[in-house]
Amino acid sequence: FFEKIVAAPADPILGLTEEFKNDPRTDKINLGVGIYKTNEGVTPILKCVKKAEEIILKEETTKSYLPIVGTPEYGKLVRELVFGADSEVIASDRARTTQAPGGTGALRVGADFLKQQNVTGKIWISDPTWANHFQVFGKAGLETAKYRYYDKNTRALDFEGMKADLKNAKAGDAVLLHACCHNPSGMDPNAAQWEELAKLVAELKLLPFFDFAYQGFGNGIEEDAFGIRTFLKYNKEVLVASSFSKNFGLYNERIGALTVVSADKETADRVFSQVKIAVRANISNPPAHGAKIVTTVLSNPELRAEWVAEVAEMRDRIKNMRELFVSKLNSLGCAVDFSFINTQYGMFSFSGLSPEQVATLKKDYGIYMVGNGRISVAGITTSNIDALCKAIYEVLQK
Ligand code: LMR
Image (cartoon, rainbow, N blue to C red; front, side):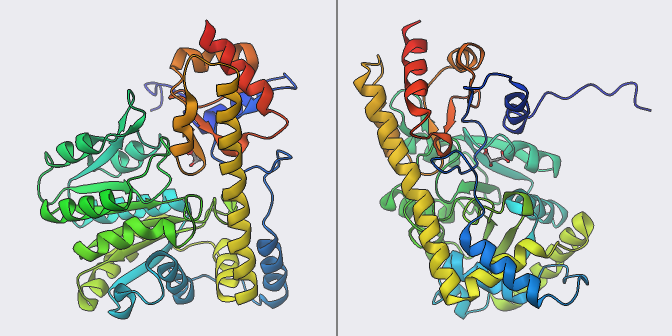
């Protein structure tokens, strides 16, 4: 049966982590995968998470199954985080949330629902995008297409290209949007552009599907929901895949959520009954620990305030490293002006380095970044930044 199986290539992001682990060099630097690190180079468990775990350990009385879609309390807290507690969507009770195994699980459940229910056959995805997007939607059986997003020459959002390509979509197609902190470019639409996009997508009758993996890493927890909330002014039906990997540091707990907004409450219930089947067929029902942490933190005012402060600390450290990175590169007299990096949001920076330059950095300097030149700024520390900037300077001279 298996003779004909051809070996798959390594994953462009997680494969890099494997390679990094096997690299014997002691001064190696990993700027590949998007994992937050402190200035000491460790990925910490947030303090609010540890406290929530203590509460859970004390209070937990059973390991019995959760409902297929997770608990109603978890769903409510997720919706409040995404839409705002006083939003019209919540007041009119037309959004439903299912727990999902991470942001990827949420995207996949959403993709399965769209395919199984013939909601759409095609989804438009930004070029560039997260390395896994095409695979997640493609393997679910949806046709995928690309829209322009980033202009390599101006190193900025290609807003005109984006709109022109979306106009080629047919009514009924879906469009995947990064709600904030676009991965990998770090370039987000501004407020006026979000407004324009929201109107355009409604006019073109496309179904917006948001990947919301970095809430809190751009401008703030509330601020980062601006794009989604703007879309809801013009679009009655929206999907949102949330992830708590980054903003709660719960990477290996695989905790996320898919929220589907329908035009009215009655439709929301019908839709949700089918989303439930997509979950049941995939994972039967979700694991409890990550959801309990998120629920405990978000529903406890003290822990919630601590979480907001911890997210701000992560966001600020990344922003500081971004600024230091730019100023060090520019003061070395690099051939390229790297100031554009300060206009990017979130964990990543699209450095503009070519695949060849990325390969040289890995081979000659032990510096790992994604082949498309994406740097995880969260991996930069005051201890590795000088070596990193010097290496980039030297590679640019070659
Ligand atoms: C990333 O883009 O580095 C993260 O989302 C981790 C992953 O799963 O690829």
